[in-house]
Length: 249
Image 1 (tube, rainbow, N blue to C red):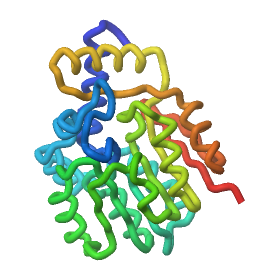
Image 2 (tube, rainbow, N blue to C red; image 1 turned 135 degrees about the vertical axis):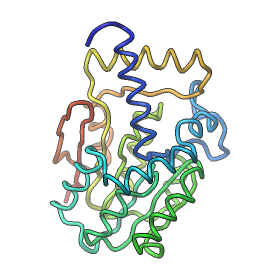
Image 3 (cartoon, helix red, strand yellow; image 1 turned 90 degrees about the vertical axis):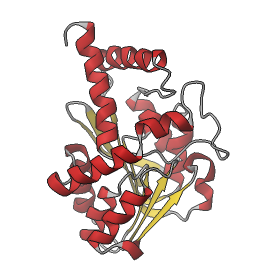
């Protein structure tokens, strides 16, 4: 990288990217209290706001999926999506769900922590003709995952990095997976560690009540494998790793 301000710019770009793809979070605490010392519902709503949802939908209508989301959809389609059920944690505006339904999925469920994306997501689903095939819920996934039916395919796109208790969230997602769990999260490199540290410091200084977590990739895979899944994809991109795990026979 370069000077410290360039590293900070990488982190801010990362935050903006999370906002741009519509990745609202589907986890927290059942009573919407503080999920950790650094992240609160107010902080999540600042990152994943109604204004951002409108911008996300505009970009999706104009350009389609962002590159990381496209990697996920292409992989899932290659594994077979016809007549499968899909559960997306932190589904945002629902673009991945829409694309998988177009590819032949039977039904999709989207989980969100805050309601800020609901109106825009419902509009996109209606435009695509999928209003009756996407079940959108505002709830705490980490605490209430047991209330949901398992799905054939579970997706967490740029979600784990927004939650402090990675094993708990990864385990909840694995337990809801019948066949395939697909996740994306940041690469662990020296420059991502420094950039995120600087960026998180800036967020604390501005009292944004939000933080990004760089969980060890091997730890993420190990946490899900403990729930009966085996890794079938571990593909590193320029910033994002896409990993997939399949339910063991």
